[in-house]
Image 1 (tube, helix red, strand yellow):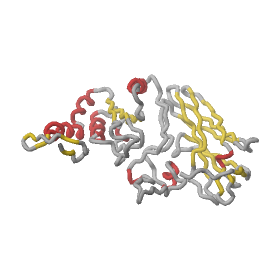
Image 2 (image 1 turned 90 degrees about the vertical axis):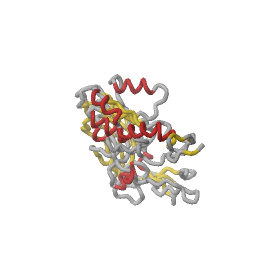
Image 3 (image 1 turned 90 degrees about the horizontal axis):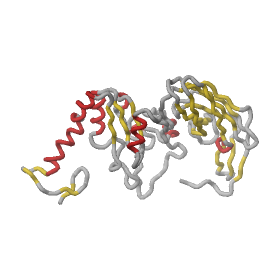
Image 4 (image 1 turned 135 degrees about the vertical axis):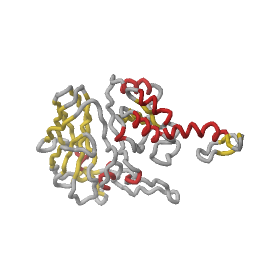
Length: 321
């Protein structure tokens, strides 16, 4: 027995004409997968081509991935199929972000997040138009690995330092100024949504929360749902803050050409920061900007809120990460 140099898995040490069994039987198949040649003609003859990428063999809670690329020759396979048929749908069966270098050359990308035993039936319903794909990304997906604000996560001396502090996820992307492939909160459905208006009450309610209303219209040809997202920003601040951060969200549904609205409430905590010196939650007086839109990178509507200064004492500081 010996270990395969690429996978580390045991291989039978039998040789045929000086070559291992893997070289004789698997290497030609793997080369064909990498080139995508076996899928080109069927894709060219099809009305729509569907490619399902990655597997749970390459991703798990029990071990780390070595990179963000799709494993094996899957990128080459997608590129070959898309070149033969631009009406290609790529189903990304992954639990975390991956690189999609061919994303502008395919008709659609559908992320299904390891759906489990009945995932095939659910996927068929989405692909056949019975159910609208309504999910939104809980992570930001990079265009290139080098763009990631946090890429090295290897402990040094048994210690992993969280140097990013408050600037996690989309907050780190916003601070870096780099543009990802897909922002946190991104997701498409059947609708084509136009954000029309944003207004807020002139003052917070008795509990310190602030009512914010967003109006939008579905300019698409089918009934659809949208996830309206609110972000808060305070560019001039005496304390460290993200460029902006998610502060609230809500769902709306509308038919073609229908205008709808949603009222969201920003709690008092959304405007507060923890004062280490005072061991209390504090609200910095002055203006906060609330932004509304479909994801962290597209927020066409803004309004200015001016919460009054208030404090809420805490018995203990928040737990450290």
